[in-house]
Length: 347
Image (cartoon, rainbow, N blue to C red; front, side, top):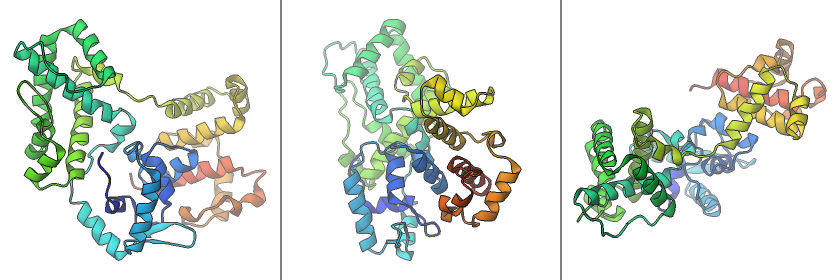
């Protein structure tokens, strides 16, 4: 994406809840420790995992400082940041702009690659409809080109043209007309030159960021539409599915526990540290709404934690229960924090 303006980060902050800018940065760039996932859950921004994988982290930190200087954000003595009244007003205005409808798709698919993949499919189908075999391939992406060649070898050009026409017509028929035009205006075809983001911005009055948001949003949701409708193009989309090893490892550890295995045995079986298995289970508790907390926490432990900790989960610190760490390990403490968050946050 083009450079994100500083004010756009206001969307990730709250006036009621002071937040760690580093956690937001880690979620956006998919730098996922269990701590980042937990606080991302507390901030309710886990849907935005990997939305900005190429984010310049140093510049992001500079922009947060700049927003503090502008009095749109304020930083407390612990380094946590929250919105000011000016920041709230600016955030409300930003909410009127176009936003990603399904940001969670960015952690499932390589959306930036799908942008090029779909543009290449359109060009190939368009040129073939005019029986033009000599043209400049606009998408200089070897991976995309190989995916298309393999697909065409199996299904043929007519199948590509029919599938694209059907899938695009069905998908765009339910979209805002201007958004649909913005999406299609960037396609290249036979004797058709795509508009640049700047040209579309000039014609529509939308910002460069909004144009790119529309493009990425419709690309990701069009990809999902293809998969959900079981189009013949599904295999192309699935090629760009992200490898989510963290999610898979976490669920694998949880599955073994459900089968009756103890953490120490799983660690030996996987040749990993017990602490690593515990972290996988903590991640699984964050990822899975139906996580079986009862396998790790009993009622007595939960009641004791409730007695030792304040009502505001954001103010919890493990040192508040360290005096009883033999019975209440950090693992149990964090699991209880996740459980209580699920019970108190609105999803």
